[in-house]
Image 1: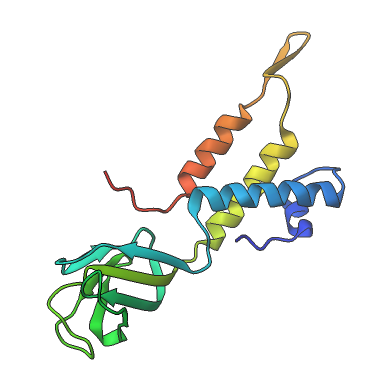
Image 2: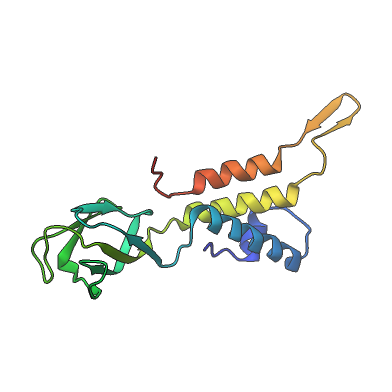
Length: 173
């Protein structure tokens, strides 16, 4: 979750909105970011990987907390040791035949608990921009004063483009 204070937001977004109101905007935009890009805290994924040698996680892996496996759907869950699997790149996990619980392929059910890669800078930049959009949001599309016409950006479209760009989930067709 972005960790910017109201003072840090104010340094980048000009507004005369009271701190309490600005905090509500920040909280709402942080929820949008979390919905679009997922939580920055630990993630649990479940895979039906029986027979596979490797599989991809939905998000890039920073660190794996644990991997638990059931050889069959009815068997007892076993927590694997770090030498039972290997991470390739930032999403691919391969089962190893060597190791404490070595086996040729993954069991029927696999539970992975991991922290996704931190992308706080991107999230914080998105938060500032989303707050800016909310603060500057206009109820009208355009304004005309004499010969000068001012056109305002569509806030819904601007938010969608920003959040779509922020998502780091693996797209599977």
